Image (cartoon, rainbow, N blue to C red; front, side):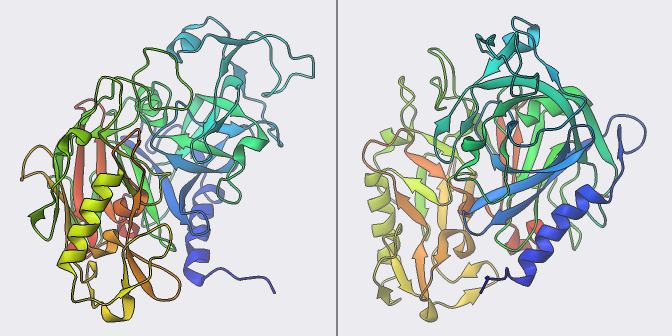
Length: 437
């Protein structure tokens, strides 16, 4: 018998589809450029990936893709049924091709012209950052449309008439959430969504990310919009900011010598459990000249990953602060698990000690409550949601998606800073309650 998805998951999927089948496209919400555009977000329970939908091509069609804080450009599968009358190649040697920082040029396709088969066309290297598989593909442009409102109802679509992206192959979608035909890059790269949308619509080069748990809705907000959540919670002026750092060495799977990383690194200086500093080898928290170490954020990493010595220190400290809660055998990939029936619930999740990520000072601490530090597993175990990344980790701390859920994060690319709210549950709201419209 087929397994039916839970009702909330069906409702969440229906909301994503509604945004793209019931709204007419226009240049912007009020005749000019919009002040902000949005991507709706849901979580795929099977893969723990965060997916979105947008409209592309002529005639426009809804596309499902996985969100990624890394990557160079949007990439989509151009081999399986890509039909559009508005795509255009990016010529080799053109300004766009130079800005894409690629020397590749497609010159040997003998088939009928199509997005996947073009000559004298700039070549890119799309990467599936989940499976770490990459390939070559044509760099082209096509129409892309995004909604300008989220709630109370989906609103007009703003249209980018020539949005640059890279064609991927069908095999590149293996390992992605069911139905996903590509990946949306939210990185610092020139042709990732944040910078390309800001240039197209002439709004600020920043975006806010609010990831939902399973069976709920979240949002990515590009540009200038108030961060208002029902019931009347305005976070626009209350975010805490820490600098975004640039890793001098690329952390991408495809790069050339001298490239800097386009991922988002932050300056973590210490970790606290229940208000007590965890003893760490702090040299691991800095990025060295080879690009090794430091802390970054990743939406394709389900749970926070810690270098082995950091992982041991944090789990030991957490175990010491929770000695009164009955332990149960570890459930992979986690090492520290408890009897979930013995842990009380609170507004902000399981009643466990807080974990604090301290950045440049005590005033810039990201407080992580139980909803984001603990993971409920099958069989009733409740586990500390951190994973051992090994002793030779390229990045010492990778803040994964679960720790970011129902937290508002603002990536200000102009100011090179990250704004964070800590848990929205503490303010009696969630990402599902974002309102723009």
